[in-house]
Length: 464
Ligand code: IFM
Image (tube, rainbow, N blue to C red; front, side, top):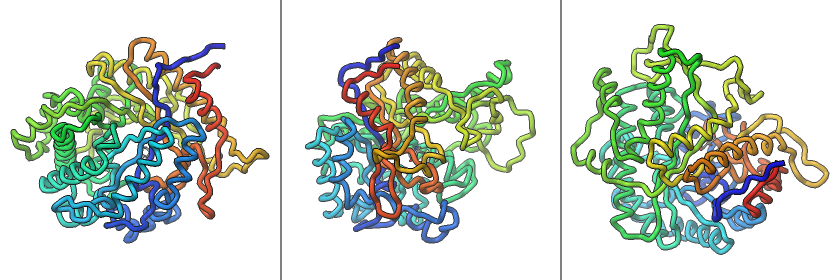
């Protein structure tokens, strides 16, 4: 038997987002998800949209009590731009939203849960998308800064851990390359513009936070996916290098090292997809230093050198490599392209340690969903059996522990997610929570993994 003990003060908790949990009650404006669902419900699993979620707006006190019950000492959620802001152009807040978020944050603090608050979780206000093209527009960058300042002004005295963006590459991929987020465009040049503008919006929020002299920290959460080759050949290694540059370093370098990789600029020039930028924007990116990094990890990326000709008539990163399924891989039986690779957590940690100044970071999302569990019965003791989750999280956490022993500067783990939540096009198809959400009653039903987690969170160690 081995006992794995984590550093003192380690954060144990869960992550979620406003739009995936709050529901639409009393919301000032719709987001792109609300209007997209209204117009195209067929794009969503079982046609369930963001109105039918866990109703945290009404039930947050009960939820915070459930967080405490399973030993969580911290929780990330997001403030919805489309809920908080009454007037997007001025950044004026909606009083009801301020009251709600203050009460929610206070409830967490009163129960010993450190709130970590994110400003953007894929949820562009619909009006800003329709009127300006969302982050296609330079004007929307300015509006985002106003929103950020409003959030800092109202909640900065209570929230000490801020996050600008969760997985900023995902709306670029989904909305502008691969058609799984609104506005469902396929346009490599526009994708790069949105990515660049998102970086500037992030930088402006970081600079605004420091400018307001609040006594907390601000960072960003990136989904980092190490790339592994098919066979280690030079050609495959080059393919992996491109995948890493385009999917990881594209945001990691500007946001953590405050540099823009020259090799990336070369790709943009070669493909005639350089975004519009000003030197002032570049200066902002280079001067906006984050205090910490959050990393989301679910699956590794497997790549090989391109064999087939690239036939798309617009740019995607796949121009430089092909995705590959590892025949020797271990897979989630319900998601046949989702490889399970706990050692990737160690590799991510080493990369941050060796190449990103060993910046302070935390595992901001990790989780697994298997279809069987969603259907499984409530057992004699009122719990859902999700022992697969404990087995897999144990393996991943052992790898993180190994990295910490080797010097990784990691300060916590947040699992995705707290209560099964609505998830974009998949709605409730995949359930990741510590608690099951009964879609009919709204009841929260504990899963067995939460008892293992509670022991871990309260003792700061586990033994296997
Ligand atoms: O639901 C998402 C979340 O919004 C971002 N990270 C991945 C989760 C699970 O798919």
